[in-house]
Image (cartoon, rainbow over all chains, first blue to last red; front, side):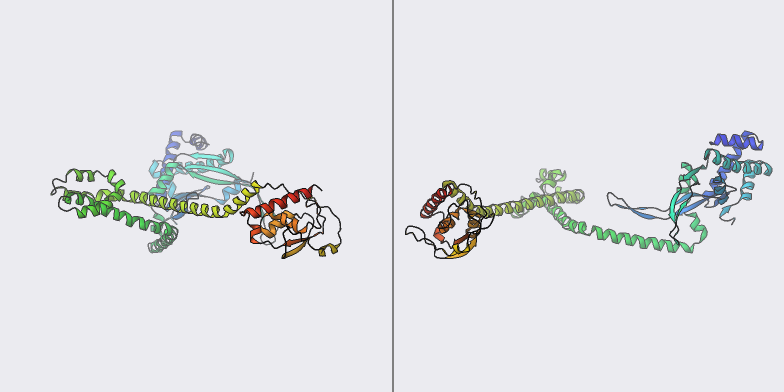
Length: 92
Length: 386
C-alpha cells in the first residue's frame, strides 16, 4: 500500500477532505521526525514504537585484506511493534 | 516517561496545534491512520508512509528447534514479523543529526565510562596491530636509515661540486656516495641546477641545501626501497650461482666414476643378464667342492661370504651388492664356474662363493684388469649358450 492509497483510505474512513488528511499526515510525520531527532521515542498507538537505538563503535576486519577498520558509533531508527499487532497479524 | 517518549496524547496535541485543526479531527485522523496501517499490513503486507518509512511484513519460515530441558524436537511455527525500514533521508538524518543525544539526556557521568572503554579498546587494537606489524616495522627500520644516509649523501653532493675548485680530495671521496644515489639524482631538478652553477659558488651553496631536504625527503622512501630490492636481488642471484656451482662440483665428482664405468662398459659391452632361475633342489654338499686352481686362472684366496642362490637372485646383482658394480659379475661366475654350468640358469640353492677382490681387480682403468674382465666375460657368454 502506498501513501496515496493510505490517504484515500483515511479520508474515506473519517470523512475528512483528502487535502486535510494529506496535510495532517505530513505534519504528523514531521512531528515524528523532529521528536526522533531530539532523541525521543515516538509511540504510534496500536502499531508500536519508533525509537532511536545507539549502535556502538566496533572494529571490523576485512576478510580478504585483513585490514582493520573501526565503524564509528551511530544512531539507528528502530521500530518495536506492539505485541498485540503481531498476534493479530498471525491469527489468520 | 514523557521525557523520553512522545505519547499518544502529546502527539495529538502537537499535531492539532501544528496542523491547525481541531482535536476531534486529529483524533479521528490518528485513529484512522493507525487502523489503516494495520489493515494495509494485513492486506498488502506492506504500507508505505512517505516521510517516515515503510512498514512491512516479513515471513519467517517455520523452523526446527529442541527443547533444551527434555531434548525433544519441536517446530517453531512460522509467523509474520513486522519490520520497519526508515526512508533513506530519515535514516541519514537520524544517523548524522542525532549525535548521541540519548546518552547526554540520560547521564552525564555515564559518559566517562564508555570513553574509557573506547580508549582501552583502542589500546588493545593498537597492541594487536603492533604485534601484527612488528616484522614489517623491523624491516622498515634499516630502509629508513639507508634512506636518510642517501639523503645526507645528496645534501653533501652539490656542495662537493661547488667546492670542486678549492679541493679535489673531498670531491673524490664524495662522488662515489653521489653515484650511489644516482637514480635519485636523475629525478631531482635541483642537482642539475647545482651542476650548472659551480662557477658562482656564493649563490648556489645556500640555495641548494635549503631546497634539497624538502625535495628528496618525499622521494626518499621509494628510492631506498628500490635500492633495497636491488641489493636483495643481487644477493639472491649470488647465492643461487654459488649453490649451482657447488651442485655442479658435487655432481661432477659423483658422476665421474660412474661415467668412466659407463664408458668402460661401452668399450667391452656386457649383454643384459637374463638369468632364469630354475626351481630345483640341490644337495647342500656342493658347498664344499673346492675351486679349481688353474694356473692362468685367478686365485680367489679370500672369501667375503658364501651365499645361496635364491629365487630372483642374479649374479650381477650380487656383484653390485658386494663390489658396487654389476660388471664384476664375471668374477663371481669365475669363482663358481666349477658348479655353475650356465650363469643365466643357476639352480636355486646353489651356494655362490663371493671372493674378496683386490683393488687391481676392481680398477677398470688398468688395461690388465680390463683384459681379464673381457676374457672372463667371454667365458661367461660362452657358458650361457650351454
